[in-house]
Structures are given as structure tokens and as C-alpha cells.
Image 1 (tube, protein in one colour):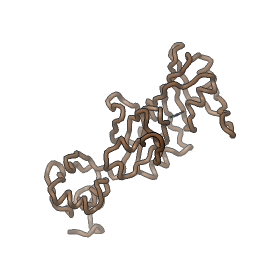
Image 2: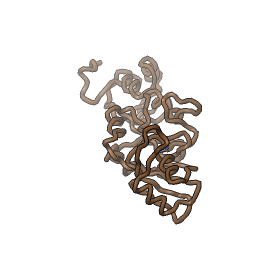
Image 3: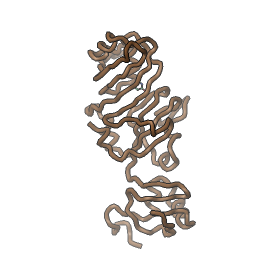
Image 4: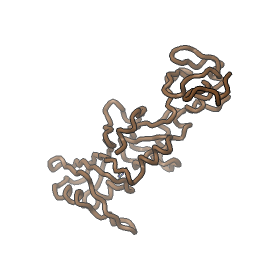
Length: 245
Ligand code: URA
């Protein structure tokens, strides 16, 4: 067995690959392999020290198809009733919606959605990418579909575009929308924001004397949440450039 230091770049022992993907402690991963429960590209491999490329390797682990991702970046269609906090309180955490290997890898939400907000949430275990995606220097547009209590008037949209003062805080701050589009004079508002302040949509809508009754994030950067991803489901995001400026 070649020691890890002599492995070709980007290659690893199978047991180590499973461990890094979140399939359990090293011993558990070795056990899965020794018991014939791991397939690589459709073939059972029962040698924990067999060497494979560690990224984008097609596995089936104890019946679960899995394509390895050295760094995970996922899109989750968040349902209402889940918290983004790592230590959730009254509501279950969004981590509960992920399969066990991703839960073990400790993915972090990229920014937060409120418990009652639905839609597009990114999660990653890639520290530098998380930093880039959450940096206030990066202005990635985020689109929210807002159901308001009262009809959305052109005057409200104008004020949101010009900027409103969020004065429900000891330190009032100004916030503006990059786009604010009402649908006739219905209660629907599409709001595009470049910042991500605490409860920003709800507070901006309150500042124009309306009230958020439903909030759904439909887009981040060039990534649009498609109908193919049902509420509560996740998928890999292979191209982080879609959500970078
Ligand atoms: N703005 C809010 O008020 N809530 C969210 O969940 C996201 C943006």
C-alpha cells in the first residue's frame, strides 16, 4: 500500500475518501468496504487501501449513490419551519434536510433565511468560498418574491428604490433595493437586494407602511431556483461562479 505522501496528486485511499465525504469514522468506513458495501464506478471494491481520485468519484455506499465532492457547495430549497442557525431553538435546523454524510461535514448556510422564509439557500463546507460569498464587499443580487399584506403601489416601489431608513434599531441604517417591481396593484412585490442586513426585506417593507406576509428567495446572482428542486430538496451546485459577482 503506498503511503499517503506518495499518492498521486488528487488521489486517496478509498477508506479515507469515504471518511472525508462524511460516511463515518475511519474504522466504520473500512468496515463498509471490507463488507463489500462500497461500489466504485459500478464495481464492488473491498480493499480500503485501493487508490482513487478523490473528487467526482462515482460511489454507491451501502445502497446510496454518491458522487464525491472534496468541497461541498449545495443548493437547498428551504421550506418554512426550519431555522438556518447552527444551534436551532424552537424549530428544526436546515441541516435536518440533508443526508447524513453532509450533516457530518458540518455545512454552513451562506447567509440566513428566517424560519418562515422559503426558497434558495446555499450551504458549503468550503471556508474560503463561504467567506467570499458572505463578504459585504461582494454585491451579489438576491431576488425575493414578497407577498405583502396591502397592495404594492408605484410610490412604495419608488421609495424602496430610493432607499428607506430602517429605524427599528438603536442604530438606524439606510437600505435600498436594486429593483422593486410590483405586479399591477396586487400584493406581490419582486425585490432585488445587493446587501443582506438582518430581516432586511421585512424591515424595508415595513418602512413603506406595508407588511410581509410571505417571503420566498428565487434567485442569487445568476442562479435561479427551478421547479425541479421541490421544497425540502437539495442538489450539488457544480459552478460557484453562478453565485459570485
Ligand atoms: N429578509 C428578511 O426579512 N428575511 C429573510 O429571510 C431574508 C431577507
